[in-house]
Image 1 (cartoon, rainbow, N blue to C red):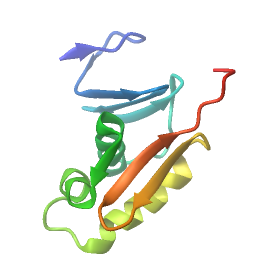
Image 2 (cartoon, rainbow, N blue to C red):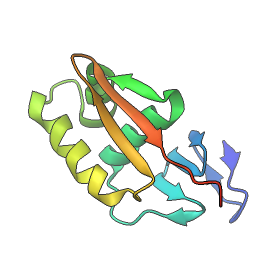
Image 3 (cartoon, rainbow, N blue to C red):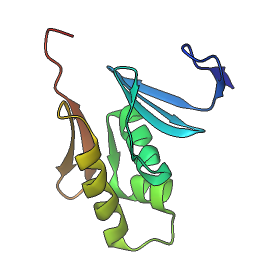
Length: 110
């Protein structure tokens, strides 16, 4: 287990990409230190996989977030909802025929 630098509680796996930080245990997402409200555990696992690698195949995201016995539309629905909950600087882009890519549009102001 690792410890959160702000609250010093034990946290599980952490993926960081720029100012985006996603934890899996507990399933939470933070942008510039502020918790993103409304992100479900399945959406946090999607975001974790994308933040960890920068991109992920559709199959990997389905297994990580929804489970191996999910329908093909379940991942698309979760991504659609997640996109609405993310700040405008964070975009999830579909890679045709493969999966998804995480794009952070960071300005120079920080």
